[in-house]
Image 1 (cartoon, rainbow, N blue to C red):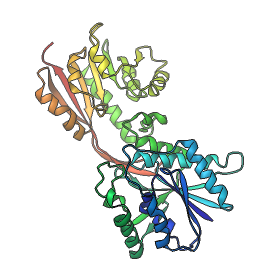
Image 2 (tube, one colour; image 1 turned 45 degrees about the vertical axis):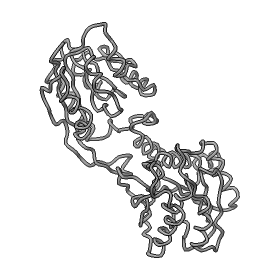
Image 3 (cartoon, one colour; image 1 turned 90 degrees about the vertical axis):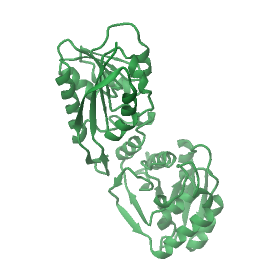
Image 4 (cartoon, rainbow, N blue to C red; image 1 turned 180 degrees about the horizontal axis):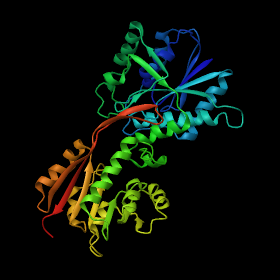
Length: 396
């Protein structure tokens, strides 16, 4: 058995996979370096010091941007490394949910490449992911390897002598500090669905969140179901459904929209994401009182024709850097805004305190915080609750 470690950068092999590099079996290990697009062979029988010395020259200054090989390049590197091995191999790589997105992308793509390696020729290659740097998730791991004092000293020595320039790196993607240097290296297995969901979950604020259907698991999460039900009931209790028209900004795949339509509202569901929008339209295809379009908040604020809506809904969508001043120009006198408490204090309350156009009529806790499993139980995380603000326009 030959171990193949696929990492974005050379220091990653030591930070997250030292127990693999220094396995007591002492067999050959190959380290595929994504940023160099080459493989370093650690020969059988070589000791820890020799192995780390072979990797040290490949630790490079941090680039300005995250660089990860194209999937085809990565697949070729893995294929070449495994073909040259000439015997059974096991592949180790980053977690798809590593908070450093370059590592997460490489971990996802490596697993896909290993999976395709067996296409038509039996099962793919065995892959294990390092938990790595994941401050928001707790993983249910399959293999934990506590490092003894000698290995910890070797790891810290490598950091201090070969990665000193990364100890003060400004880019958090490449910064090396205590949370990036585990004393126990943890690993887990993941099936393709778990892998894609973990990757999408950590892409919550960029377009890759749409890489899987229902990335936030609205359809299966008890917490999300309670939040959505409470939000729909809040709107229904404050805005009579009969004859009322709502604009739902950032409707995603329609989990809330379906509840509003079922309550009898006429809903304009807007979704600027070109991947989410067709799913939204398909989910609402049978709802006569719902229309779907691509307008975002900025576009809605520019609309100065047409009827005024009874209310605009901005539910769990104010995380993307939108300017709250845009709310002044929406064609409505009523806003339903919901966010986790910390985000509400960061994005909405300061603006509302200065606003001459809006006042808070009501504040309600829609759902309290809860800890919940995600991705078929592979990990769990704290969901921070949702607080709703009902705002009324003070001037027309």
